[in-house]
Image (cartoon, rainbow, N blue to C red; front, side, top):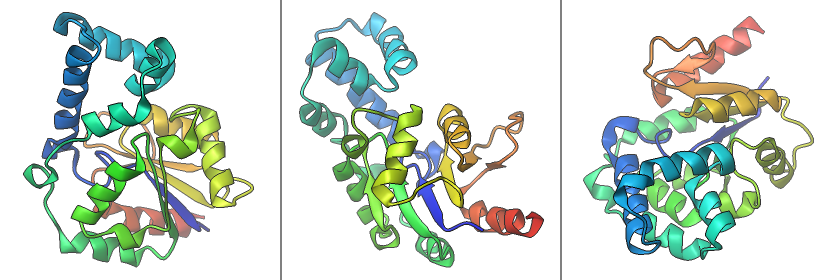
Length: 213
């Protein structure tokens, strides 16, 4: 029934409560202060504006200020992963149990993705990494980003494809593009029908989906 699983990276491959995404967020704020000379008081509003209108802070900065993408990505991902990520041998085993083709689909860059996957010792579990550069000029949750991911993967449609992400707008957009969208969230008040609390819940969830047809 399913043949390909697309995984988001940050807060999906690793637990959202580990603090890494917050550390990256602090690096983004520092970039805006040091490199863009913004006031701290206006940064939250600016990032929200960028996310709502451009998809990510990076896309907003590229559109509004024509910044160098590589400089930004190198700056914000300059974080010591060992302070936040915990190597779990069970993670590789769980991923190995999923016999589907597995692909990372991230708004980060490939260098950051490989650093995370390598640190967690699961890089060999993924057939490809589709990053912000390969998706360019689109980013999740723009519909074109999902179509481009399919094109890059050699797929004619999203039929039989699964998309796993911790950010609801990304999952909803994937579903609208024909994927089975799965939200990783511990929010018990979420009414999204396809929700798991941990990546380790994915094999059982997919098995249930197949059984239900």
